[in-house]
View 1 (cartoon, each protein chain N blue to C red):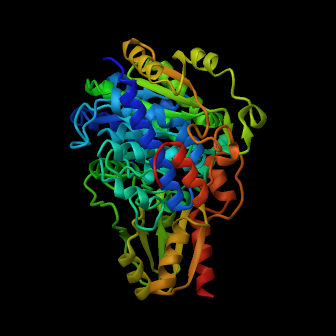
View 2 (view 1 turned 30 degrees about the vertical axis):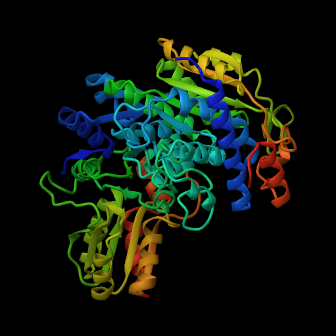
Length: 310
Length: 274
């Protein structure tokens, strides 16, 4: 059994580690420091932590001001409010100015679970990737989240990092080779390709196991970076396999599926099936129940591959 | 520091002439709220702020953020007057390829500290700048100009709450209180008063002044500097379109360019030539 960890947990641990050596790091939160895991940093470095209260617009405006004064800022709240409520501030005060703010947004997608539809974000990747200059990251597990967060901190400019509430089995080891902008082929295959983003990677790998038993070889790519998108790995998949299934805990409109479809339409037309939230709101429930009900499990990926086979 | 009102008046008049000139040439822009802010900006740039046009990014400088970004022509005029860039640039306002965008861009214009335009955000960003200066032990002060209509933005009050909570005494908000917004008088659109009580209750030191009196503006800024443990809000009563008779107190001149005849008359009233 693989080690389990939520990507937000990895974020909390990353901040504790980074804070020791990076005195320029300032962390902001909006009354969710216990949930987003910024609280541990706040305890150790209270002078470099600012709780902005339940004010997500000002959270990101203030983050911009600190960053434009030379700080590197991690500013956290739930993805719904970071990308949704504060969108236009993120666009104008962070995107347009290229401010060095890392928007570390937790509780993304349907696996936020019991809180229900008002808190289940399926739009954030779509919103964030339309902002010029915004790097958009969606790590699959704890170890890869750590690596991507470190690279995000070390690069200059705005980043959106999508993090989850639920614990997920770690796919990667501590020494995994992960780089922003480069998709990872985590399983070779020759018939079809699944391009997965975020915590859907486990489901994608499980789907590959199921199909293998039926003699279908599935390539599995972890597209942890939605922007800049790794076009090479997509072109290779389009050329070497018969079709692509995109998998995301996000709307099938505008996120990973949208990005891959835009790319392939221009460069390498290929059949694509889209697994994700099918243009509807969610509801309360346990994460596993919700993934099943809203069609984001290995079985749904298998079904999508079968559709491509027809 | 004594206030040289004659000098400031001369500078402010030049700034006003350049505001009208820019907007006439660009055939678009916001004269009303630029003219109302001209005296405040003149005192900031020619009397109060520690800034160096030859070294616009100098460590420890004071920073000004134009939260009401549509008053860009006033900021551009005062920056040019202060020799951050040549005055000839002013006539390129809002034209394709110009550094003088319709709303200020911090990377295109020397001396512009923040790209603004979407109301309320400049204030919020100023809170971050003030926190950063405090963390760094940087004595530079942060000045932010807000419009009165801008107070209707929710983020203004989020920012005010944070500035009060964090006791940002290095932050001074100046309110260009001309009473008018695009659709008419503030109180007919959405009442924003009482502004003094609002800012006081958010933990601000509040002063009310005549926003066209150089002495009063300068005194309010000096007082703000002495304030410990509290940010300051200077409520500056102004006249929209100030200095041009036919623009004064007219909401219609919020975002409209004068034609040739109007521009001539406006500049003549200000004692200049188009």
